[in-house]
Image (tube, rainbow, N blue to C red):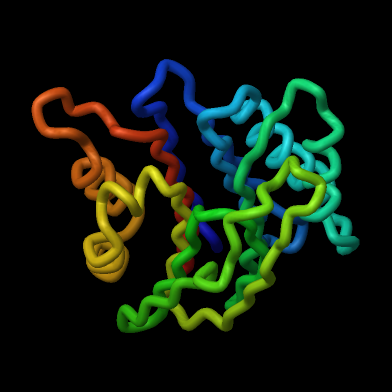
Length: 202
């Protein structure tokens, strides 16, 4: 059984421009979509939500669903630009594609960490009509974790700390540790929108 844990909160602005969706598939797998609306331009939140909704609604399709999400966001006059990562974890494998700077890590067996989105491109973004999605896939060794985070997580927690926490912790404990590491001293607020989606299988 695959367990899912999620957390998302605005940081640095009143509205959260991150969006995510987690969907259980008929075969027991899980679909995850994660998007981070581009700041500095109107419509980032709308773009992120639209991209996730489009991919989640078409999860049974094998036909370039991420590319068609780019076209759908570009066609919406109220939508700006966004990142988008979407993947399916089933059995002991994960596969997906990404555009932007959100990240997906796989932690397998004794703690080996692999950054699945290391080769992605940030530009052109989703909503431009020309987004480039870089595919990824990996075999998973149980017990495994697949961790998806927006840049508001890895920028402010720091990559070494994200990796250390993902190796040593799981479930709500991992999410709580990431939140604590990213919060600003004094105010306890997040400096940027902060979204985590975690899948686990023992």
